[in-house]
Length: 122
Ligand SMILES: [Cu+2]
Image (cartoon, rainbow, N blue to C red; front, top):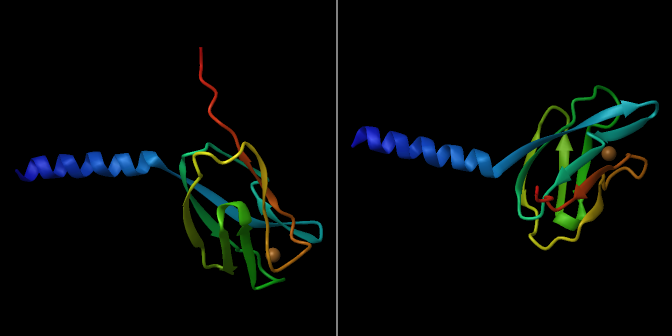
């Protein structure tokens, strides 16, 4: 019985991991501007992603914003205190490119969320 529960636990665990993809977003300084990196993140409608958003730059602003209006995400990210946001990309979200910016600093360079349906292989 114990063994059965253990196996069941492992199966459920791996199912959860398989369903949620972790995407790390970080502030990066390029010349005089702060950017969200990676520059581009590709997601599929219907998938669940977990954004781990980090601001580990020394100097400059103590916090940044992670703002993805199309996914209703708006978070304050303090230095050295990662924020986690799990979100399901709506199944019927229109393919295209959406900004992932910062609602605090107009000069903060946004990253791009690319929503793209999986192409089925022939
Ligand atoms: Cu910012």
